[in-house]
View 1 (cartoon, one colour):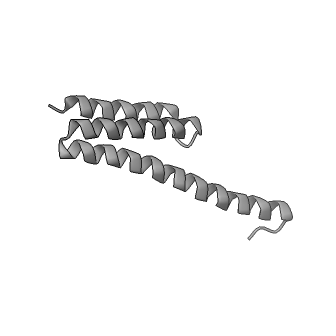
View 2: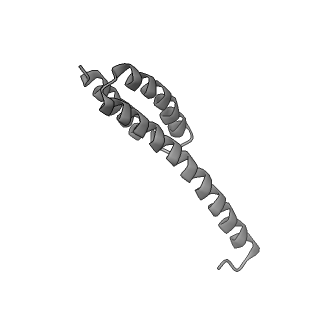
View 3: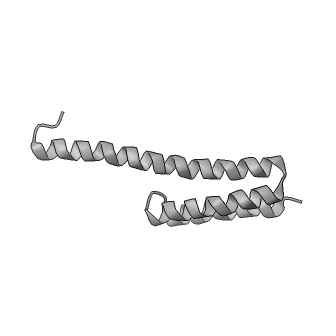
Length: 87
């Protein structure tokens, strides 16, 4: 347990930050799952639409440094490749 006022404040801030970042990461993962689900169904139009929505979420997470910019680029690249591979 935190013994000083400063340590108590930092503990409270840490909990709040963790809660916020967890929600952000959940939003990001849900966006990717929706694209993968659309790809699995085989509907290219739906997959493209889901990717467009997910792309903004992924970029937003990279801008907020929830996700590294190279990881965001990698995820977008792989999702695009999956969509392009659909016949």
